[in-house]
Length: 289
Image 1 (cartoon, rainbow, N blue to C red):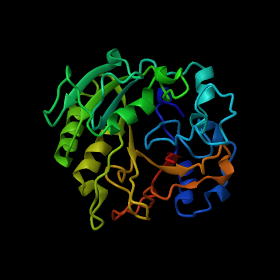
Image 2: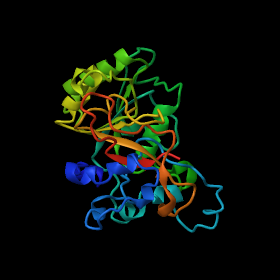
Image 3: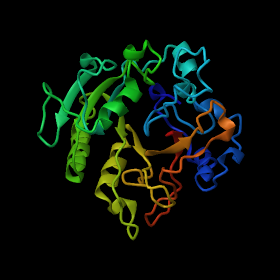
């Protein structure tokens, strides 16, 4: 699974792995080897840094590593993509988040092809990211690793970005509407929504404005959303409750390179969705601690 192939996994196969969200001993979940090659990563982990990844450079498990990249990136089996020169070239990713810091050493300015602040607090010439979350997410998606000689590089260091800064729920709606009107104009292939809003458990996902807009976008683009940070079951956030989005939960690596001791990250939202449909979500999990 990689951006260039439009990250698509059959619902039948996804259902084989979502059970890991309901049982703490996720290492007992067996994944058919015929399925594993379809995923760049260990078990059911996607090669997209949507919920963040763990940074444990000082861990004794990694101190003697000869890897040219952070071993935590090896968790998603990034090296084969590097060997195949899969870098995200010609792929445009829209990041709806808290903005971007232009002078970040791992994100070249010329890779940000468009910037819009829906709060009107900044503009293309003077972008803003007070929280740092948007820059963090964008760096994991496509940071060059320049500041660390490639060690802490992102997943796809040649992608280009459309950055949409939001600071409120109403601005999220405006950003999604903008993407609906302008996504194809900017040749966007992937939309990243590492954001979460509570949804009404008494209603359908289709009654949630943000989820409905995001699901509409998923008919044209690969749309990926965070499951959330609500720790317990039936707490998947909107827009992650939408059926056609790739909703990503969190994996806890236990600070070891051994995948057999991994568990569902305690701080991550877990399925099923709180909406009337009780959909099997998240679809996949990625390193969160």
